[in-house]
Image 1 (tube, rainbow, N blue to C red):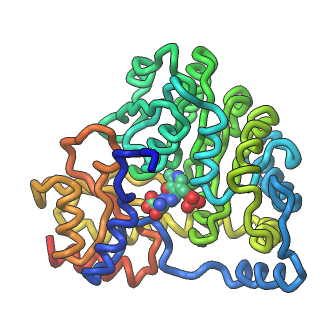
Image 2 (image 1 turned 45 degrees about the vertical axis):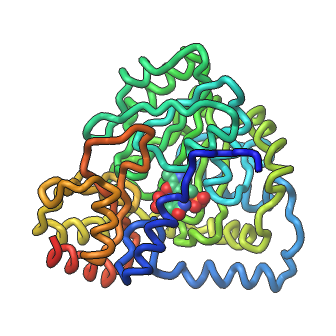
Length: 378
Ligand code: PMP
Ligand code: GLN
């Protein structure tokens, strides 16, 4: 077989979920909720199927859903996206990222990713024939703009931004976005902006979307996912918003790789988006879980790092163990009974740090059980 991604193993999320199942561990590794979605949303899917929405929708997505997405983006971020020319419904954020990268980079191009970087960016860039250039964030997981500048070469074609940031839980600031805008213009870069956690930002901070910055928006693919926002990660429905020329390039590829996404789900989401309460309340919902989980871990030797957004809490375990991150995550799963994700998998080069990530998108009793095992086992 042709050697596509020859040095790539199995994604850490599959590995750790399997290990958690083998050991009966509480799975705080892979990021997904262990509670149900809103029954009203589920009912809408059933209703859409009963109403006969079961054939191919238009290639770019059900028009009512694209209208609802555009209205939400325009309302929340003051961005003028057009449902006809700027929005494409995708098979989750993952497809949005991979197709956006295929659309804007190719052989010989370099793409900057900010490390720790979500694990699908590197292979997605390589599959496009381009070279991922990992730029480490600062020690406290801020974007190191001096390092980004130093990494830009005449071959740099794009940068992948992720805010709120998986795995660190940091959120980008207005200054970050303004700096990115200047750099992108100076070096004529495309931006692939992974904003799948756009509705999980805590302590009253805003989500700084590329959509808020017209000159940045003009060169950006904004990627989001309903899986995160509505607790339905298995639905794999998301969208990409980008100006007409970028969207045209995106759809040229989308039409022959995916073509369309599950029709009844799109109708359900279109109707459900009419009520802003579910996504407007999401930050408050997850902030309460963050606070409870942090309070429960406060008595352990784990050092809690700041969590400003996402549903991930990163901890420093150096007071507990000298094991490397992957070995510690394995030990934690097998011996303590709580699965976590080692941050080392989000870097191209080996790291000296001792950090793992817990997902707190879990029922309160799941978090309490995990915390009690961590209290007893560390
Ligand atoms: N980007 C980031 C940062 C993520 O955490 C995820 C979630 N797994 C994705 C993209 C992919 O989203 P989806 O599950 O909708 O493909
Ligand atoms: N995005 C989720 C995480 O970061 C998992 C996605 C996956 O399993 N590929 O944990």
